Image 1: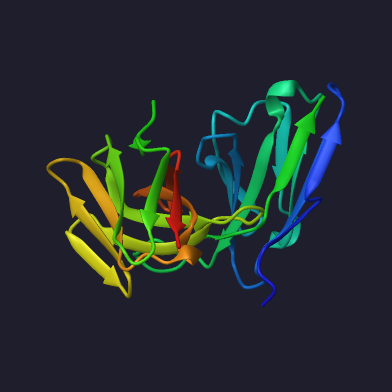
Image 2: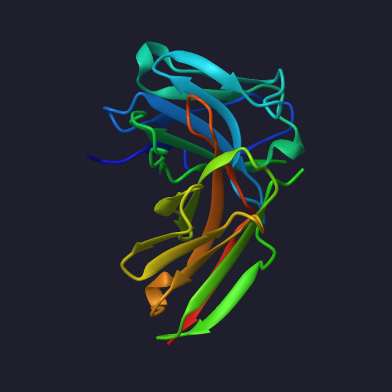
Length: 116
Length: 113
């Protein structure tokens, strides 16, 4: 079990460019989450996948953001026409998704995006 | 609207003493509360949780206390160790079908040797 991995770890881009991040969850986990974290704040929920289905999107996820999880394995988060306000740490987490008690979410190390 | 609040951005404690991290919440629809710990350059890792029907949960050096009437919970670390130095996030689960979790802003704990 290698844990949740994210790629790239750091991304610097110019305003207006598109960026794509990848998340590889723990292989047997069917739930996958994307979060955004800015300085001094905790992770903020962006979107949730159950297998390949995107079941919930936060109002934080503007039209410029899109996420996919083809075949229920890895996931990508794309930001189009980046703005300086998009600068943040983007975190991915996965969980096995069974049982009444909340399942521990396993987080990746994050992708730090800087928009110049 | 910040539903989970951690009003102390930072806390310093001597090694061996007790660390108490506090958290307040506003939403009565939360059914579980969780604590996550985060080291620099790593993602948060789960530490301990408590159901809203309990008032205490203990796991080794870590104990979480819940006061529902006050909408307040706290994490106690006894004894504190230098390796406990990290950012601690209080989080709460909204009872949905997929474990939607709302995080507080975090408290940075420094344990001084």
